[in-house]
Image (cartoon, rainbow, N blue to C red; front, side, top):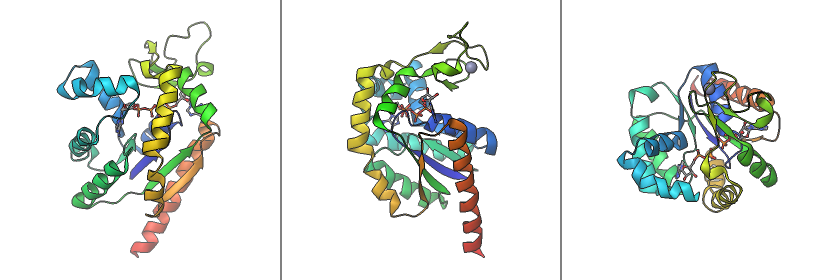
Length: 224
Ligand code: ADP
Ligand code: ADP
Ligand code: ZN
C-alpha cells in the first residue's frame, strides 16, 4: 500500500500515519522526522535544513526531492509506504509523480485532513513528542502526575521549537501559500479524498481505513 497523508501542520498526519503503520505494517515516512534526525546528528542535510525549519519555512525543493529519491528507492520502502509531510509544493508533487512512474508503482490514495485554523494553532502549541519512541500526544492524553513522561514507553516528552505560537502561525501561512494549492493538483488525479480531521482520532482512523479498503476493491475491479 502506498499512500500520502496530506494536510496543514497539526492536522493529525503523524498521529494517523503511526496508527496506519501499525495496522498495515508499512513504514511511516515523515520528511519532518527525517529532517529533525538529520539536524540532531548534524549531517550535511541537517546543516542545510536547520535554519529553514527553525523559522517555520519550507526546506528548498532540490534538497527535499533528493531526500525523497533516496528514501523511496531504499529497501525499506520497497513494499509500500505512508508518506507524511511530502509533497509540500507543486514542484515536489511533480517530482514524486515522475519518481513513482520510474519505479512503476501507483498511489493507493491521497488522503487530505481538513482542520479549522484556530484548532491547528491550538493543537500545534499543545503537541508533545516522545524523544524515545516518537509517539505524539496532546496534553489531555498525558498522566496528570507525570506530564513529561511518555505513557507508552516512559521516555521524556519534548515540545518542538517550531510549535511556539508565532512560528506555528507562520507555518500555517506557509501551508496556505505553498502547500494548499496541491489540492487542485491531486484532485485532478482521482484517488484524492478529503476527511474531516476535526473528528476524534479514532473516528478519523476508521474513516481512512474505510477509504483504503474501498480503493483496494475498486483497483481490483479495474484490473479484472
Ligand atoms: P508538521 O508535522 O507540523 O506538519 P513536519 O514535521 O512535517 O511538520 O515538518 C517540520 C518542518 O520540516 C517544516 O516546517 C519544514 O521546515 C520541514 N519540512 C518537512 N517536510 C518538508 C517538505 N516536504 N518540504 C519542505 N520542507 C519540509
Ligand atoms: P501533523 O503531523 O499533521 O502536524 P500531529 O499528528 O502531530 O499533526 O498532531 C498535532 C497535535 O494534534 C498532536 O498533539 C496530536 O496529539 C493532536 N491531534 C491529532 N489528531 C487529533 C484529533 N483528531 N483531535 C484532536 N487532537 C488531535
Ligand atoms: Zn515513548
